[in-house]
Image 1 (cartoon, one colour):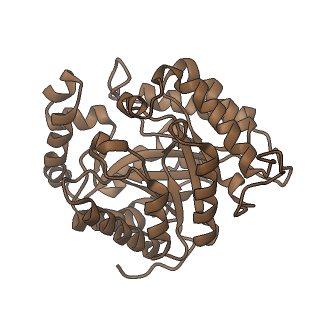
Image 2 (cartoon, rainbow, N blue to C red; image 1 turned 120 degrees about the vertical axis):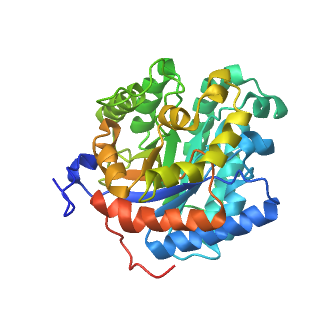
Image 3 (cartoon, one colour; image 1 turned 180 degrees about the horizontal axis):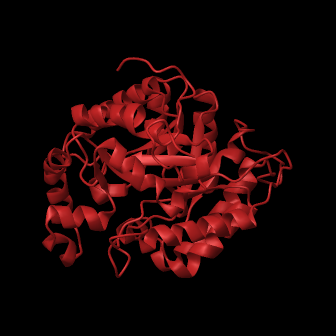
Length: 364
């Protein structure tokens, strides 16, 4: 398949896909301002036709992020939007009570008109586990038990000897549950297969070189991209439809993009953010790289939309997805630049890959 622009499209093997964006809020600004800007960005994304927007969860500004309560933030966003899907990418489930998560999520789902996409994972920051009185060494076992509990609650199982069940009910939310896999290769394959057997969507984060011994080769996919492609096949091979309602696998993959007609200018714009990220990095090697090398290792794609689209089309992990999630990192842009990037992503980049908005595009 080729688009009208002539780019060979391997993305989703030419099938339609949904477009989402992942919101990072790591600026050193007052959190109230950060939350107001988050609402503005979701409103703009909805006007641009994005299918969904996703927020991450970080406790105590770990990763310099402001969002410790993603469902609360999404409730505020829901009040200002009408159509766009509202996702968690991801909520750190083992540090929560799954029953309370289900209650909060069900309430938000009703308030938003059934728009919540509930993504859960185990979280990368040991300090959060310590603060919540849990051992990160138990993360995989705790995640599995927490997901099983969440499944049962959302499916309406009796929660006590009185036979009481989840209220408010969330009849459609169970089929909008996503699991983010671990990056640990010992657990990733079994975790992807478990998500498939549960009928949950599979969430994969950005493919970077930080966990690989080799950087991206001059030709061909990165090791991380190929690993993700293999995980997706593991997931799809294990898929079952537990409700027998014609459900199908859901695969979301995230990629970092920074569309701009001039790559040199794009590099200049991301440099302050990259330098901030490098100053926080626990990896000495990351702090020593120049900006271009850091971006290469981070897997971010900068420059004209046509070039980014070609790179995404050649990405083996994107050949069999249902959802493409774009983020504008490394280094989070200021609010005005973030709006420009959202616009470029929806109006320039994604159409080159065959995406079409399911809603009318409106001015931003």
